[in-house]
Length: 227
Length: 227
DNA sequence: TAAATATTTAACAAATCTGTAACATTACTC
DNA sequence: GAGTAATGTTACAGATTTGTTAAATATTTA
Image 1 (cartoon, rainbow over the protein chains, first blue to last red):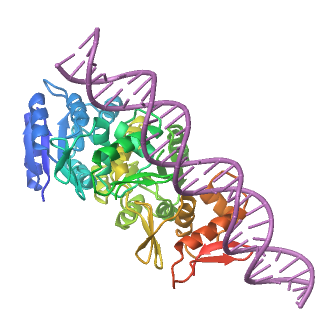
Image 2 (image 1 turned 60 degrees about the vertical axis):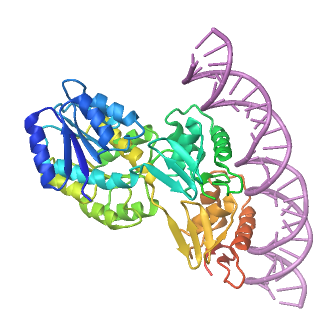
Image 3 (image 1 turned 90 degrees about the vertical axis):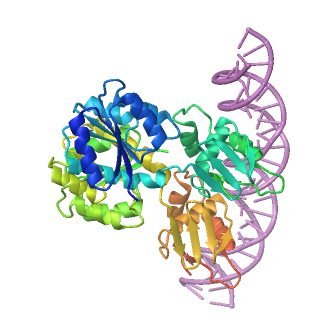
């Protein structure tokens, strides 16, 4: 069960060394030294982790990081930024764009390896699978389609995101605030009662003649996906 | 819904500064400068994140880290190690014992903050499923369900909170005032007799034909979960 | 045993919470 | 730019939960 690591690095000696060492550790390694190419390859291959150089000739690492973190399909892939600059501002910028970790060149390989292991361990349960099901409800994240009893169901964007989130841990109760945070994002200017309305709409959409209701209300606590 | 951060640090100036800054950022902060104490407090309080000094007079940070990571109940709490030593070996050792991140003193607070945010973002939706049992009574905090002898029991919000609290330390007797404080919160305008009523309701709910009563009245003292 | 003290419980009114329809606003599409 | 879809807000009815009271019951004390 070896992890797949994607390295984006334009300095050849570093790339070679990294690849060699990572493979020796048993990881599967892919790489690119071109930003644009890297971006599309990552989206295509969905590696388990990305090592991303800060400076690239065409498309900066930080941009790549931003793009990746905005893409629903790959945003959960952890990213370690590699940079020659040690300035604090850069570090903060790097982490704020969503990178999970940060190392300053020249870095020690053992330390990098330790950070990789630590990240992979932590991130695994978080990796979103392409398909998720709960009872007769199925969500296909690739095509963004939802089915109930094999029959396709059409949801609005918010309802889709809500279900996408709820189905990650069925039966778990989320407060309205949690749902706002995870489904709506940092956009805090939304009333928590709004969640109710979207829950109602989601309920109506996924409801099918003769089937159980799938969303549970927990009074004074929140909602969960459960019948 | 601010996160709870536990700081273990014996250097007072650093501790003060950290606490001040973290609280300013809206986090709830607890702390200890004693290793043994920290260990038990962390297990009891289950914070969302731990900042852990490498060197402590009694029990080293790395030991604490190891102990925490071996304990099923708290192993999912992310740990950031703080150390004065910058040596690579130490870093690696720190990460290998399971710490999620590592910072070398003197560290920049913005960078620490960025790392904290990054870790919390990644970790939060992943909170450990928490279960507590006492005899044939079980509470699942993830789904907020309560069972007695495998059979689900339905409680109102206050009854749930009451049981949730009592079951943390079965057999321990709490006064009405304590229960008001912990279960009702700062809302001090509630008669202490009200507790009686809720205890009664909780009793009725968790009572099952042919099973022992689970709540003990200690005359002129309070109540405990105990048969 | 009677009196004093403390707890249990039922009843009820007040407070709180939820579901949903209706409407206003914003974002998209052609 | 009109038309459509999606989203957010509000209001209100209905349901549930809560706190209080008072009477009934239990326990301790003198």
